[in-house]
Length: 160
Image (cartoon, rainbow, N blue to C red; front, side, top):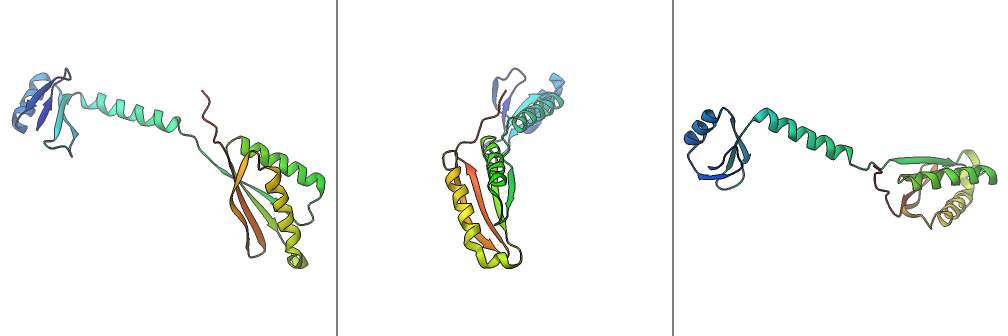
């Protein structure tokens, strides 16, 4: 195995027994850092300190991730103008925050006979947000619901 000492200097290729003896003499642990390498790479270090640094790096990576949620906004074919504008304002707010938006048009009773009204409203919505978003899933009828998914053009970066 290839050995790296506690000062991060390469010792060279040594036997496992010799590497363990050197680690014991230094009062530290022998840690395999690259098992898939040929020959495997081992380092003489304090293992608890190594584990702590690794967990800190993982925590930092998780903290810096940007999470994209899917928000849902529900419509009906009879949704009035003011209600439509309020929902549109909310959709724009969600998209600017970097979230995807699922727009659902629900049909009840005889409204199923007028699906073109719902489709027209979703198309109008698509045109209203085309400057900041793109349609990921075009309007699709599933049972009594017409759904469309919209995603923002640019995902915002996490602010410090």
